[in-house]
Image (cartoon, rainbow, N blue to C red; front, side):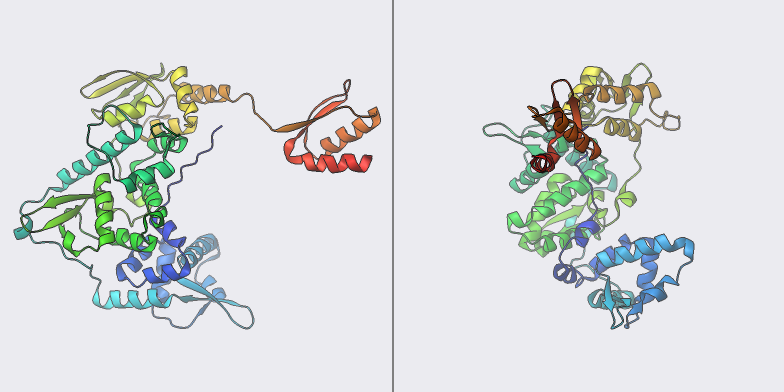
Length: 451
């Protein structure tokens, strides 16, 4: 069975992976400190507030006494997260006892923030400069249209309008994680790419941002600068206009890339240009679960394997084609069927049965969302059976041993391989045995000792 390769992580996981020196540089910014604080579980937030004006290290044993025994696991999770993000720094005294001290830069900036409040590097432009701005509904529709255009181009669908090509930096990001190409051939979706299309929108966004930041150094950009700007962007007001002239060159390039994905909308005035953050951008500093907006599902699956999707979206139609046979599309309805052939095509592309079932459940229509089960059991069982049907034979690298000088030596080798768990097959009449290739060296050493 194919393994799930696509992993969606939020920004704080990427921040925690930075070297200690770069992480400390990020804490020079008060709003980044606030973004980090927002991401913590409730108990970790409480510890930060309690330690905010404590300059001396706090013994770990003393902090353990802050919680009841039944909350010990939550205490450990909170401490681990604080250490990962270097908000707490571990200190050991002469007796090797562990204490925790708050990061000096984080502590100083959060103290200033609580006293005087934080302010972003730029203020929104007044309405007298920008004129009428898009409403929040118009902005959300724009973001969804841009995101759909991106996914359609990723699928390489003929439904995409001409002229919607992405920048070289974006294409490198896709090539790195979602597309693969051979010499002389156009780029196509990889297994990761097919799995990516069945993920939730916010999970897809995290994945793209992770790859975009991971490939920053290849473009000559410091990942720390990029993370800092993206976290800053999440604190801007959705629907407000911010001047492009306040951005440095690295940020201008990033804004153009983010515009292609629908995170911001660009507008041109008579004298000034500005960008308008959408909901996708303002959700960046929140956790994956917090930003997963509740959306209305569209899919109804019947016990006869018929599938109905109440949508006019071209993207929804193309995604359903990944694992079902789309029969026709009306202005607001897609009708299809889940067949053995369509599922085999999905399995060949690296999509698993569980991913398909999860997609159908997460996108279930409101009329069926309260049913138990949401997707008929005979359908889910058959999807799993068809996947298992393709994986009845498992390929294992192995070595064949034959031409033994005596029956006694053959039996000793069989017993040795069997006792150690790497005997795959034996034929006593022809004195042959097959051993897992991982243990070939151990088998050779055993044969040398017998000789």
